[in-house]
Structures are given as structure tokens and as C-alpha cells.
Image 1 (cartoon, rainbow, N blue to C red):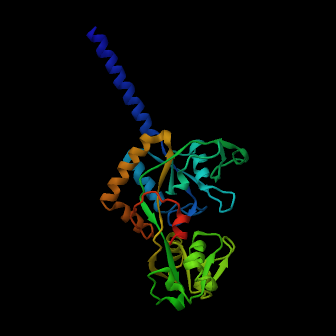
Image 2: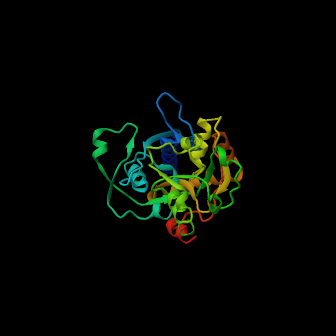
Length: 309
């Protein structure tokens, strides 16, 4: 009897070891946007790069798993929904984690629809572009970086001290229509800056290029975009004001709520990387102005916050 019991235990241990080995061999699949440098970038003929790329590799290494990145393209149009696109990628098994995800209350609500379309992704077929995917519920990791908006100054305004949005009065302001920055500037003190603002069309105008050419004095945009411009133009004449708009969002990973065990493991790695200063080190090495996560971890209704300021 004892021999039979010992044999059964040995078999169970061997099976568990085999399953563990298989899990270690399975790639950690992470979905990343292909064109948001210096967070992540994937372009033909160039090596993959960005903070989220090296972070994903670091996490995979800590978990003892190979990394597989699924690149996707997020369209900036009225019909797109980053939350549903991320959900569709996860629900279709394209990845287990979506990185660089803005952690806001709106982006983490239970979907109001049962299915969603996949975004364009590397390797997508014609059928993939037509399919609708039954979606699940998203669950966030702990945040790993804070992404604020910042004021960037043109050559003639480089010495202007900016401590608040009101310090922009009298400058030639450029902003992309329909963006968060547009809402902030247009509603500041009930329209105080409206006469100074020129609107540009997103995707059709080169906002920072216009600032570089001294067509405007200042703009308000994601800090990431200025980092990317500075990396691409080391001799740039536009400068960071050092001012960060007080309402910003943390970024982290999202997974389906059924992958809670994976998120727990990822959170343990992120906590260690944060406490040892490794996250800041990876950010600097990627050309990113790294700012640690801030409270609240998940941003609430940003529009109400802006309108009430």
C-alpha cells in the first residue's frame, strides 16, 4: 500500500514538474503599439525599440519565460476605442498582456458590447480584419510610469517661465483639434486663451514642426511626444518648459480578469523594479523622461476634473 502511495505521489510530482516546465517554455505574449516612441516602436528595417519593449523583456526574463511581442496599430479616429481594441487582442489570444495602457476609469469599465473588432496587427489576414471577437473584462496591473501633459516652448518663447496654464497668455498657441490639450486650453478660465489659439488637424499637421519653424510659441501635449521629437531631432530649437499639467494618467498593463495569477506575478516584478530604481533606469536608457506612478493609480473622470479647475 505504501509503495502504491509513494508511486502515486511521485507520478503527481513528475506531472507537476512537467506542467511547470511547459509553462516556462510558453512565451510571455505582450501586445504593444507599433508607433508610440519612445514607449514602443516597430518599423520595417529598424530594430524594435522603446521603454515598453525593454520592460517586457525584463519581466519575461524575471519570470523565466521567452518574450513574444504582438505588434498592433491603433487608429486615431472617432470610431476607434483603445479599450475595446485591447480587449479584442486579449480575448482573441493574441497576447496575455497589453502594455503602455493608460489606466483611467473609463478605459477599465465593463464593456457595453459583447463583441469588438481587432485593430490592425502584425500578421493580420483579411479575415482577421472582418472578425468580431467576444470580449471579456479587463483587469489592470499596478502602474509603472506616469504620463503627464507638458507645455513645450518655441524658440522665441524659450525663456518664458511657466508655472500654470495662465502663463501662456499673449503667446501664439497651437493645439490639435479635439484633443485633451485642446479642451484644457479652450476652457481655461472660461475661454481666457481662446483668441491666442490656432487649431491644427491631428494627423495632417506637424504640430512640433510648426513650433520648430517658429510659426507658434507654445503648445500643450503628451510629454512622450516631446521626448520622441527630441530623440529624432537632437538639434531641436524647441524646449521643455518643465511644467506638467496636474491631471495626468499612469500607464500599466491590462489583462483579462481570468489571468489574475499572471497579473500577480507581473506586479511582484514591477514592485521590485520600482523599489530598486530599475524602472527609472530603463526609462532613461530609452530616451524617456521617466516619472514614477502617482496617486490615484487609476484616473477618474478627466473631463470633469478639467472643467472644474
